[in-house]
Length: 303
Image (spheres, rainbow, N blue to C red):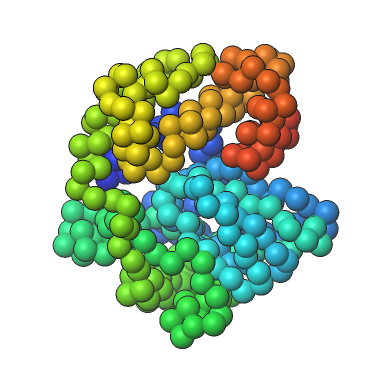
């Protein structure tokens, strides 16, 4: 695996059961067009998952709530959301009247196979590493945004089974879309040169959480591992991991419980306890917040 992807996958590598198994494109043409409709009464459109490809999802019917990473977005008909590589995301319907959307899912390799070229270093790597942030949601209310939506609609009109026959058209459209996103991207002010150093400083904390997540963990004992004051530790941890230590622990516990839900027949209450939750109601609440469904629904799902 490319070293760039390894950097981004460090905290996600232990959550392989979240990885979507659907194939998106082929080695010859690493891009796919998916079209989905969901019936009236549907709440969860798809549960929390991630994939190595990037995604451009356009809502064509209904109102959708998308969770991408830690952020939730409301999408109306015609809105498009950009989802970066290896980022967790889920979706649910807000009006329960049914709806539809299409998604263009593609690997960076469709644009440039070699990440070490000058082109990739300037135009692709900063996006994958999230040093450069694309506008997350675009609407039909701006010149450049409308152009992207028009280009995506041209792709949507293709037969999804015959993309290879339209490779030149796809290349032209996708490069133009990427150019428009790139021209209006913003620098990520959260990332700085100290992040790599901070990641090394808090690595003992991450290792400790991995080994002791099923037990009670306090801020004081985590801060003592470095050592730092609790205030300084919380500030550096949040700056580096983009969440508080407690948020990180809760997410890690839920991720481990997902593994047990899928791989074992243990009762949900036992899984909650093994994952560090001593209250089943609180476990259900945290699980639903992070994953977008109940533990039982997750266990019964086929994604």
